[in-house]
Amino acid sequence: MLNNVKTDPVINKANHESENWRTSGQRLLPLQQTPAPDGYNIYPTHALGAGKISEGYETLAAWIIRHGQVQIDGYTGILWDTIQDSLNEIFHQQSLKVKWHLTEDALKDEETIEQMVRPFLGEPGAVWGTRTSLQLADFFDREKLAAMQPEPGYDLHIVIGTGAALVRKNIPLIYLDMPKNELQYRMRAGAVTNLGSSKTAAATEMYKRAYFVDWVVLNNYKQSLADRISIFADTQWGATLTWIKTQDLQAGIEQICQDTFRVRPWFEAGAWGGQWMKKNIPQLPLEEINLAWSFEMIVPENGVLFESDTYLFEIPFEWLMFLQHEAVLGKHADIFRYEFPIRFDFLDTFDGGNLSIQCHPALSYIREQFGETITQDETYYILDCKEDASVYLGFAENIDPVEFRTALENSQQQNKPVQITDYVQQHKASKHDLFLIPNSTVHSAGANNLVLEISATPYIFTFKMYDWLRPGLDGKPRPINIDHAFKNLDFSRQGALVKKELISAPALIEEGTDWQLWHLPTHAQHFYDVHRVEMDHAITFTTNGICEVMMLVEGTVIAVRTANGKETVYHYAETFVIPAAAESYTLINKGPGRAKVVKAFIKAEHPVFSTISYESTI
Image (cartoon, rainbow, N blue to C red):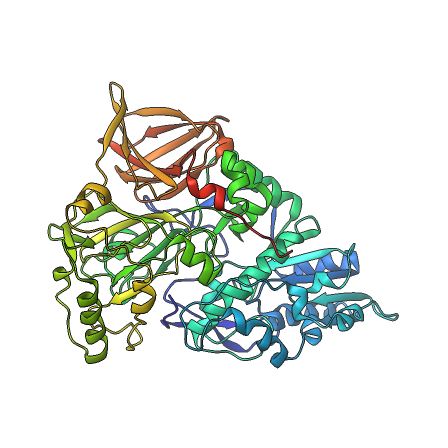
């Protein structure tokens, strides 16, 4: 996910210097709403009404001046110098004397922090670490934080930097945030560092530390601040920002969590990437070499866009869960708490290559080795494909595990190709097929597919065994994880059992004069299920207290009318959510021909539910 593509310059309004601060082939979010295309929209917005979003440092500075003392806290990846310089220039123009306290001055020394985080980063060079148990306060010298107090002779007193809210309570708090994709683009450019570090590292290493340490620590921390924040600011533009008062943001979040919403997707190139998304999503940059992934709804890394007076404001998705997880998840809120359990993403191999031959960890393994709570149980829904498309799934009859491992290790050591179909079954793929990939199952998507991957939320734990001898986009071999894989592979999933248990057989549940509801059964290990609605005109459902994630998989456009009477339009291949609190909704076909909508939802009961335990480090 962390390949270098393109570096964007930004003009810093404070010092007027050009900086290379983000590396990505994806364009920066427009500051203001642009006309939506007639089709898939990469910038789905949710209207707040007039006067809710403010733009620019001047407006934020005016708010700070009215309050005198403030704390400016925020996530890792914020360009703190830009924030401080931009505000300070305005204060200087107004002849205001400002006492700045920088939280970075209160950090523990870097060697101490490195020793703190090292146990959570795995062996040197390892792909994965373990979810941390650290808290943000562990990174700071508490006496130095406590010393950051107001001093006489200043007009303004500002504590700024990650951890600012640790200094004092009952002081107005501004929280700066940004979506995770933009944070990663800054990592790739070497513009930002990990929490408590002054040095950049290889992008993959920075991402690993972010995933297992920074994001865990800071998500728990910002959840603890929810009742204290006065202002939220979106800082992804660098040279400017947009901001919103907490009560207005909370009202907007509450509204969409009673209705329907869509997160902002983002897209990545990859070694096996294809051309379907570039050809079918007009807002994407054509200069990308390919697109392999779409983060349709991988909510640890997605944001939600709000709009007011054409200005845009993006909030990371976790805030919806912190503030409205009961409305979103309904009956399952107590089980999954602040974690959204289902993800949707695209795997594009059209005119591309095969994914690696891979598997995902067993539940006990992902918990013991990586500190995750649920594991990566997946399905492949074939949204589109060419005639020769296929999916690799399950083992051949009477496979010899020792022979298979030897072939894989020889390939890795000697750069020799493996005749993979000697060991792994290859199945023809057709539109609307659903392939079931419970954890520990060998699998791969073949070339010329557009796969809608419906899965449990974990998304980085892929044990690659064979990658077709190709390099990554950086020209280097991608990591191969044969040892991890063989500690998890289920060799009983072979022969005729594969088609019987791992390829879903649709069953008609209900039908009317112009609609049908189909069940696409998932595996017993999957805690979520899949239905497909096929309709000519309209059909109404109740949520029954359960959240549903949906996509229009055939047709051009539908509308969703919820119980409050509001209608929201969604186009082909767009992912959207019906929160449990919506109570009821009507799907309305607005295009020619029959529409087909896939929906995934959590099963009413599942054995894994009794084993889930989220421990907050707040």
